[in-house]
Length: 176
Ligand code: PRP
Image 1 (tube, helix red, strand yellow):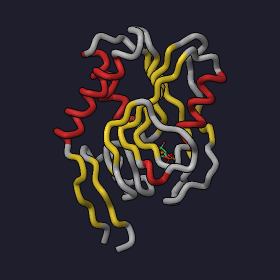
Image 2 (cartoon, rainbow, N blue to C red):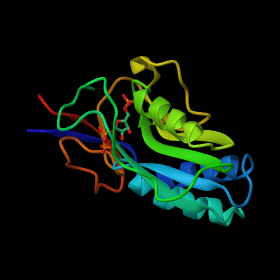
Image 3 (cartoon, rainbow, N blue to C red):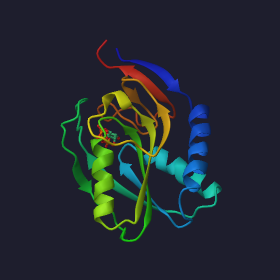
Image 4 (cartoon, rainbow, N blue to C red):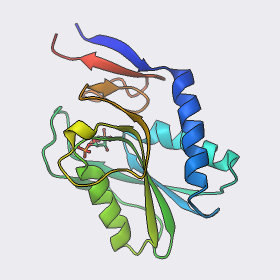
């Protein structure tokens, strides 16, 4: 049986996302573009965008769908562009938002892609950082929570496509 333990509850996440919104809003112009990485960031971006709006920004929202894990729990080491942006990023100031930075490959790939598309500046924001797993030399500019090497799910993050719907973030032990 899979064991689920709450790591960050709904109230804790809401408080932290509100703080992140304020921090990030101070770094960007009013008309910045938010680019979320699907699928994992869909819940985070929804909450972060509204926090940014409360801090005075009127951002456009875009998504890139990238994938490196598939149904497996370990990275294949290769990031794939599954679905592209619908807007031109040339000359834009961009907030790149993802749910979690693990090896760093996804964030590095997305950041390069945006700069390659002509973004003037890319500020990176990750709700969760797992620095002990890093394989690529990149850190998000703004981080919500730093966690040890535990498997986390919820608030958009899956295990084999389950648990994304959980309103809180939990650790699981998939093979007890
Ligand atoms: C997960 C997560 C991050 C990425 C982090 O996405 O949402 O985007 O992995 O891992 P990394 O730092 O080792 O690259 P995944 O590829 O599983 O796709 P998903 O967002 O659709 O769940």
